[in-house]
Image (cartoon, rainbow over all chains, first blue to last red; front, side, top):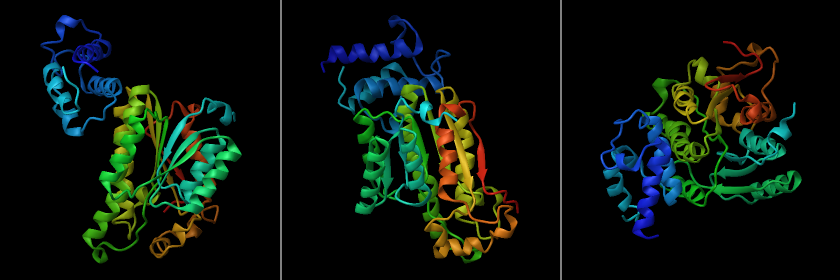
Length: 81
Length: 255
């Protein structure tokens, strides 16, 4: 899958799970909006795992604390942006 | 009860420790309700495979054996992850695998207690953490942990087995709260001594010395089917308002 479609899928996961607008993504961090709480986090991870067909390590799930950090972490799973 | 109808949309279950005893009765019972099943056992076993092939044909469901040692975390993760990556979505998880132990604390090696916890508690956490992922995606699921009355009553001789089951019960209650937002129910069944091969083991004999049948109004051991019937009930949508519960299936045992 190319970088462009990966980015689209990545963004859509956030947009669908948290019901937010694309322009809010760049600065989005864990617990910066009410919906990105621990329950929302598991829904986000679930959407990303399903979307990219990966299984994230627990350390990565815990370290995934922002939209930007998530992109870095997904590189480990060969998801390039 | 319309059990079969409730499960007719082919729910998929993962059952650990299903090659004999309560575990096998659980797969038989779930198969009879129309569930497809991933049936875990520690070692490849041709008798087990023949038995599940029979169940599969008899009830017209798919039952696939999965082999790994629960003490081997790497293999456990590999096997379950590969199921999830192949888009298997689980509706039901039954953590039924376990090892028994009876002995006074002052006569039990700490390494023995660690081993019992590795199998009865930590491996159950590993399995649950992975399988929960697919349930979270589907926003539904039922997790049933097979504990023991030994994990509630906690008498002498229960420093390893009983405490590991007590940990399972405590964990299940916590998980029931964490999973409620995701539509996943978590319940525990606490059987008393059940008529299985495990109940005839040397370890169980020590356990029996603390669990006398004369304290049981029904005056007998439980049958595996009497446990698996409750598993099927908790697996079904019929029990949709039950979560965070510990159900004793013990013939009225009170100590």
